[in-house]
Image 1 (cartoon, helix red, strand yellow):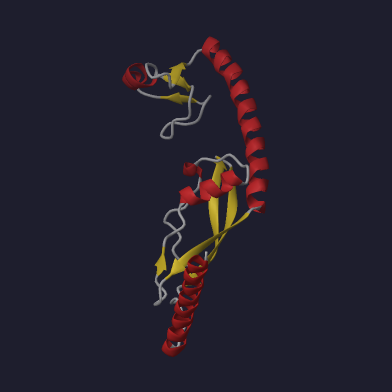
Image 2 (tube, helix red, strand yellow; image 1 turned 180 degrees about the vertical axis):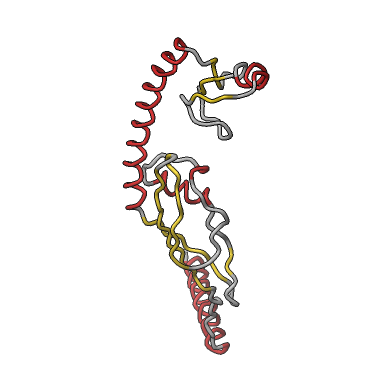
Length: 187
């Protein structure tokens, strides 16, 4: 039995193709699911008309994806990760981080379009593919730098100097208190 595919079906063909399948497969699977119609001249004309509309839509989507590709390839996203004393990196750059950063730049994109197979955990420059359309893939440049951990430095304070400062403050407070007491006695 010959049928015309209404949608792309990987094992059979693409939209608009006429394929020969077993009658039971066509009647019980393809036709009820709307994946195909029986091949005849009337259906062929209907599918041809639908194909023109589908192809126009695909061309428009491809054009939009090409514009977006130019915008994405001009971007250079920078991320800073922290590292411990021994150089172990804390944190990673995920596709969610990339999506958020791209959206901050004003480009609408979905996380599933970013083809980051595992999070970035190292320092360096990476090219991350972004699939915008079946035929358009943009390469996003991601620069990851690592900030080394530095122990906080404590200022060494001389104990004598600190003790002298404390006693000066106490002496000043005592002198002020004595002056106020004498001023109240006179009044």
